[in-house]
Image: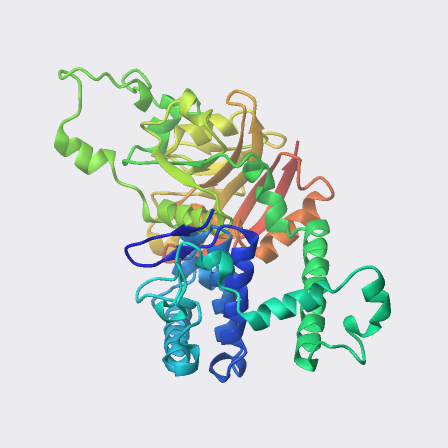
Length: 453
């Protein structure tokens, strides 16, 4: 069924015939001097039209267009790199110039409203068509003749008139034959490219495939408040280092009573309960942008309000280490874990070599004295919740931010795939990362060790 908004004349193409008509009009525009001599404008124009025709208009956002069309990284700064806005403005201007010409008054209109990236489709009043029938009957007589010629006769008539099919003596104009050849070549090229991508997925795609396979919403669990690592570890029932803190008065966040006598004040909630560290936010931002670019939805929960049942609702990304009890819980059975106390240092312990403390950080050291930070990333199938978990956890704040960057870095993922080998797509694994730090800002992370389950 063809949909038409009677108030503003916006038409929604539903059938394949409708979509063919839109593409035909799009190609008319692209074949003019307004677009033909540009590389950038036709690519973006064609992309937004095709996405709208496939019903994915809600994903036509500035950042996603920059990623998909102009190969920008998922966390690129749209304020300093306005390539999408500039290109859309030029496309809008060229469309207006095309329809300003009298010869195009009766054609279908493809419009881009200011401030939007989703094209609209209209039928001109000058065409003299019943709008309810326009999507079905808006084919010109010349196009109908082209379609008839394309189908051609059958039986004895075809045998008597061999010139009906394209060839040296074909009835098809040279431009039509050229267009058919171009389309065929493009379809072959796209088919080859799609087959190659399907048989040779990138390392990033393989890394995230277990979390994206069932199309469930991805759950991000972020630490909030300023609970110390010792308190969080004790609340999670995990002892760190040789000097476990006194846990007599420590209450797990998910078990805090709700009666008025023991409930925190509004001010305490404002000051302690709802703050998220910038590094955790940065890691979450990078990963959620990657997921959005692949049309996956995400929801964000605080570690203090998350329950085990919440984690059963979909794949999980655990952000933060010492301040997130769910991260510590997930790491407890693994080879690499966090250890230490606030009274000495924190480090990543290797349970196969527990005396080794090379991957350590003194959180009480002056900022300028901290030269290195460390982080754990892991992808595991957690049987207790029946979901896949991705862990992004640094000892310090800079470690968490760098770990989030690493998980969407193509070169880093290729190196990780090489280290893990042929089971990279399916095996659970745990990785220790190290990174240089200058004034609290981490450099590019490096793989220090890998454990495969």
